[in-house]
Image 1 (cartoon, rainbow, N blue to C red):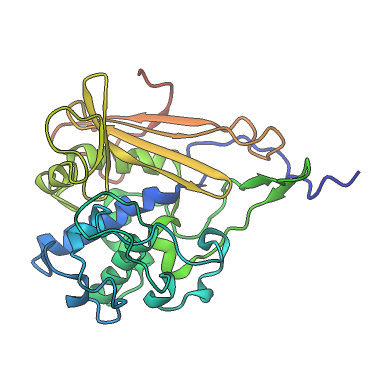
Image 2 (image 1 turned 120 degrees about the horizontal axis):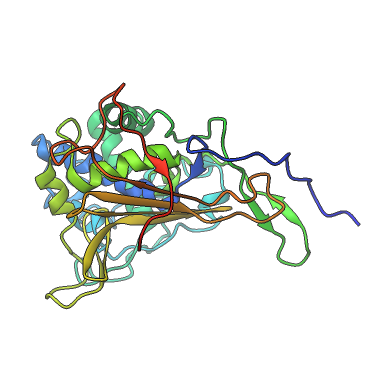
Amino acid sequence: MDRGPRPRRRRTPTADTQYRIGSLTKTFVAVLVLRLRDEGRLDLADTLGAHLPQAPAATAGLTLAQLLAHTGGIAAETPPPWWERTDGGVRPEPADILEPEPVKHPAGRRFHYSNPGYALLGALVEQLRGAPLGQVLHEEILAPLGMTRTSLLPQAPHAHGWAVHPWADVLLPEPATDTGRMAPAGQLWSTVQDLSRFGAFLAAGDPAVLAEATLTEMRTPVAPPDGPAWDAGYGLGLMLKQDGGRQLAGHTGSMPGFLCTLWVSPPTGSARSRWPTPPPASPWAGSRRTCCASPPSTSRASPTRGGRWTPTTRPCSS
């Protein structure tokens, strides 16, 4: 019986193995937008149309804060075909990522997660910086934090995504698609080691990237909840949850064949990232990676290049 493509030879993953991190990409985009705000280039109360002339008419009046917090009320997904498996050439312009009537709720009224919303924020960053998203990410976040193994497209060594055929016992390889305009919603690849550096930054800030006060603002619940008795919410590009009396901030992510989670505990300065185990037949079988990291001091959230600090892959306490 033909059981489809044979998985590649099994390899042992390391802290340097790249995986797709999906919607955790959104937190990187939010950092870029907040950097622009801190530089005085924009205000979060500004409308999208004020800075992105090519913004679709239905979204031009939404504020940047609403897009960051998923309270703009626009559709959760693009029109077909499914953007996560579709080449970005299908949607070359911002208007191509939205359906004809994309507004589903009144702006500012409720939380409604939107992948196209973050695609628009990525287009805004490119417009104001005059450079492609990948270049801006590298110059403003990845290089300053020493994240040398994070990229929009996979770089070896990297894991391969697999899907189980819905009607047959067959493993099918997932394509490593360049999603183009939708890349800000979830295209980044990263490693356990790099995400540990990013988690340490989210926990305590780094003046080379974003001030600690701005990260505190990102971790403030926007939608919902309001009031002290809450257990989950969303800030500015960060998911928030209460866990055993601790407030955690971070993001989950998924792309075909991959799942990822990163949570940080700002009071303790610790971070945790995790990728679930792929199917047993995968070339990366047994590749569940969990990484904990703590800043080397309360004054600096990520190591200087050539420093002694390195993230380790070890079990985290709950």
